[in-house]
Image (cartoon, rainbow, N blue to C red; front, side, top):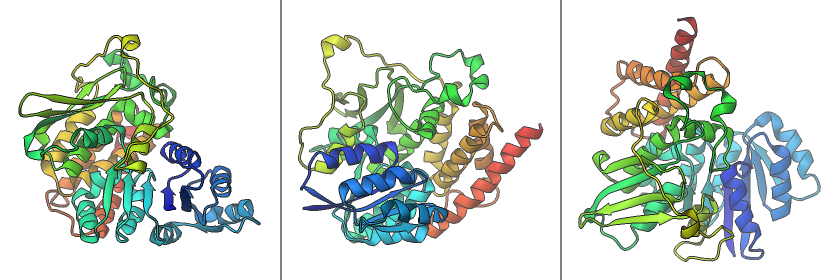
Length: 391
């Protein structure tokens, strides 16, 4: 029986993971489930799946979690230390789906045990890619990508020699605002940006899709996970979200991964790897789809992609600054303090400000370095938001 832990269990990725686990009773033993403020969901899932421990990220919600688990025999924990303790518990497979920089430390800790880490936390690779990959190598751990795009790339490379790869193309839906006139984008509201035409995701990820900051992150992830030079990585708009990525080879061949827009594809592949098993996902009818569209993204509409290119070229701490500024800019937009198109300006301004304080090209020596720069960048990003408010 495989031991499974799910970090970020109450989010979209976590819930889809639990759906697959629940469909195979007797095959898995759930060790730890962690979540945020949705205590009702976290406790219900822990009871339903018989978890050993449930942890909320919020220390002030511990009593509520304990009450929800009363009589179940399931341990309750809260806060960063409890998350790390949960990551220290022996498990064969761990889903890392905590959103944001908060997911870094548990993921790193899990790798120390030589486990298989299913990585859905974009920030781990964007902010600390070389450190994360080195940690996995040092402890004989395996990292499997769970983003649909990177899972597609991973599958397209099975049995292939990386030296034969000519380019990697990451597809993007274009988000909920892709058909808006360019001049209307600055007026987009949180509700406008939070509606996605294809995917069912959380609010933050959906807005990141509309701004293409999620795709910017995925370009950086591609470089870090697969060791591909930035000039070999491309992004294209693909409104149908059927082709998730393509790998181009030096003989001119393009290998494409197609699938319905359902995250259980990528989660299931990582859960069952190296096998393939039946998954409860829709099958594609190409005749019914009839047409697949692709076109180049407009960098005026999606300035995040240009920023990602600069981050990939710079390396070092640039990814940490980019991610921290991106998260802060999104907070500012959600709070109504800046407009939709101001987010890219905040990120660019933060990168510029931090480049005068630290040498961005320097590689971090450890996770503490990454987290320190992360906090510095968040402070600079809030300053950039305040400047825009008073301008």
